[in-house]
Length: 112
Image (cartoon, rainbow, N blue to C red; front, side):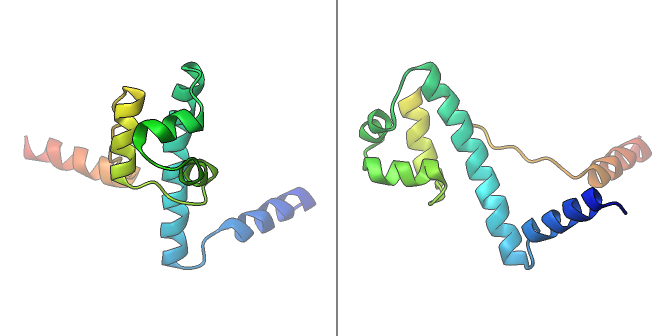
């Protein structure tokens, strides 16, 4: 293993969650970041500021700033309010891991 690979592996281990609770927290932050990123894109396209959004959904600018910085996680009620303010519809979807998808497809073929 060369130096670059060792550094890459060391960096990965620093970011890897050590407990299930850390994994859940990390996943929640990733989901929130994806949601906020999409919302930000819409806001930029509409020349909307955080202050404008905060007023429209009835929260303080400070609170919405904390959400957009990742200091707080948005809940579904907050997301529902954002849908209305932005005039869009957010969708939550579930993706099965590849192995489960393959098993499901195999079971479907076997039942035919």
